Image (cartoon, rainbow, N blue to C red; front, top):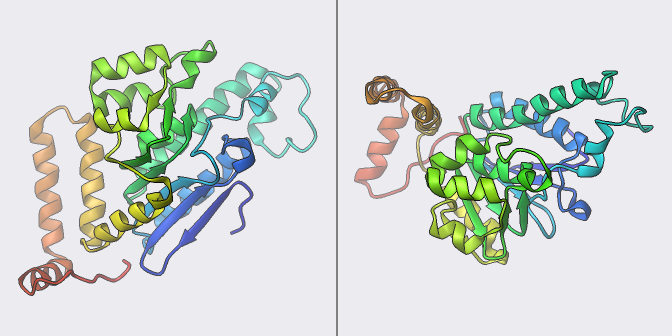
Length: 281
């Protein structure tokens, strides 16, 4: 499928790479990008040939957040030519457009968590608003020293709790640190993000994709079913009311994994001190 605002590459080894591709706009999230991200995530929901996903940005930044120029269209009385293809703009009342559009863009976050592939966000440059939300929804984040994380909505008269930020950030770095970042909308550098545990490591820009690929390749040495069930367990643990609930799921997933041929491959590779090789699925 051809895309206008993103690129998608599926390598033979099972690593998928989504590249936000509006470099002239610092990869600001346009209506078209939203639609294309929905399309690719819907495909990945059922495409088990893709086992690990890398999310990155083209050009000088990961993503500067929502395209504010297009956002103004949600309040306009007349829809500019060419925008009639976006169904949420068909609504006659601006408030209804805003409500539906907000729901539509946040469903991208839901799909990032629902797909079975672990997501590695490879981050550089500006990362604000919706781009910040994409990073929070990823499973693992690595960044360059020049990365600049901004909770932008609080700075433009909106609430600082947007696109899952008030859900993810306290769970990732703790309530107090998260509250300070969400309330103030201040910049968080790549180095600080590493220090507080928001990103796993800081990498030189020219090595960023290589490092993400190296991490993805390490995951490929694990059982495909094991990776999928681990992501499901992590999702459940975010909201689990008790340790007992998580233990019940983990017990079930371990028994299920034992029934697959992947266990025999892993055991054989372990004792021979070689990395196991799995089929794409």
